[in-house]
Image (cartoon, rainbow, N blue to C red; front, side, top):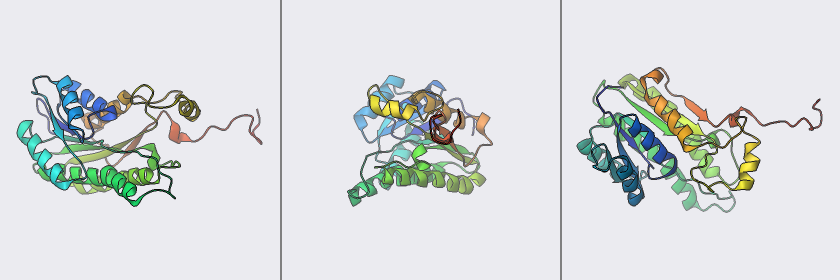
Length: 259
């Protein structure tokens, strides 16, 4: 990635949760941060918390599924902060709909935001980068890309697609010096009470690390992938899940298992 005193990072869905933690971590790492979110008020709140004078953080309303909005925001960021050096495609939705009752509109919305959005933003980012100056893209996927769950056919499909989009982008943009990777968060409690006690108790049994993820865990992984220490990592999806994807625990009391 091209070095400058303060590189510029654009983070989508940065108005809350994982996006807010990522924007904060990058700002602490001396990035100028374009805080984008479909909720303009949330984006403004985060940007102000990072830089009251707006000198190193600006807020932009953005629906990532709109090609026109994506183009307009990238142009505004280039004008206000500079051409982005890093892009974090974090914006996403995760509704629950059974496959039998899922409206077509629900499927379309999830794929538009979770998969088309990263495509549009990555395309805009790559087109804007001057030739041979590099850049880094990190996509926020999910362990749902590898481990499906009931009620999330659209979500799992979108995140699995995002993993393959990451690999395709790495292949096509590598010759231009742009690295592309993804992180796959496991269960993360973005705010107190976000995960029910019952669900947390059940899920904890499948996490060798013994705890639910925190937004800071994901932000740390994203931050690392943007550094030069990760300059030979390309086209990868790193699970940040406490070991959830390693498999399922087999209790000693299960039939056929010796104690």
